[in-house]
Length: 145
Image (tube, rainbow, N blue to C red; front, side):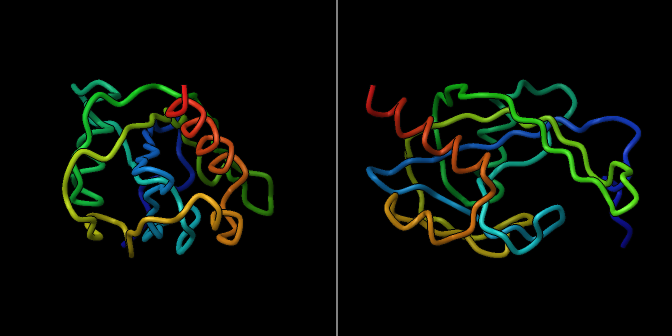
């Protein structure tokens, strides 16, 4: 099946959510490009007619089976992936939120290969994208405030 988001004519709006449970963060192993197979924040594309906050809640439910409430905005990140010729292969505008875990037991759904809680002190061992690391740090700061 061809990747309908590869070589786009416009950016896609995506949402990501840092779900915190104490000193642990929920991560998914990506089941699709870009960053296929890497650990990342759960999330996905905003659908027509839903707010970004509604998209965040829906994506967490679909991708992880968890419930969250009242996601709070952290930042907006540009994700541009170019091919070797310099053409834009993927372009996402990512609206990142954070929320505390409300309920549910995580299980991989939608396009996630795996989902699991990771302790804050072990995150550096996962090879996360630098923007993911920065967004997670912002979420832990927001939780502490």
